[in-house]
Length: 135
Image 1 (tube, rainbow, N blue to C red):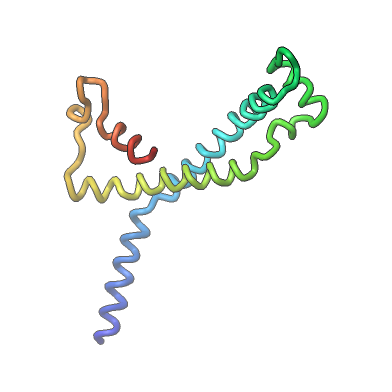
Image 2 (image 1 turned 135 degrees about the vertical axis):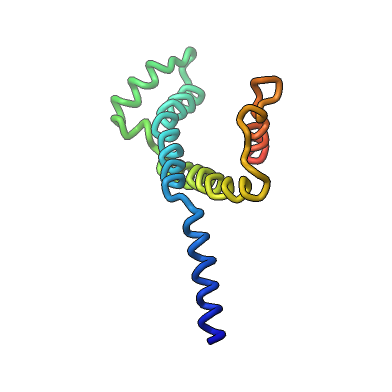
């Protein structure tokens, strides 16, 4: 009888934890991380190639044409796989953790009021604190 009560309590607590986690927020975070790599990686590649160019006047457009001629579209994303995985997982954890902790914080400290969350009418201290915590 005592063992069943413990199992019931464990089941209820684990169910609450599962209910508090939003899979959508983890997926949204991964999509955000992946998008930054898909958009930013070609520009980073071009910047790096332009910086290490031995030409007297390196031109980003000429570098892009040369890269495309020699490597095709894959050349722009060379070395991007670790960034894609790392960026996706990092943003996924950030979004998921934030969305999972926010209801607990609201329950413990009360709901936030958007009208009073702003300092000087335009600075949201919640966002500033999140930025400082996230680096």
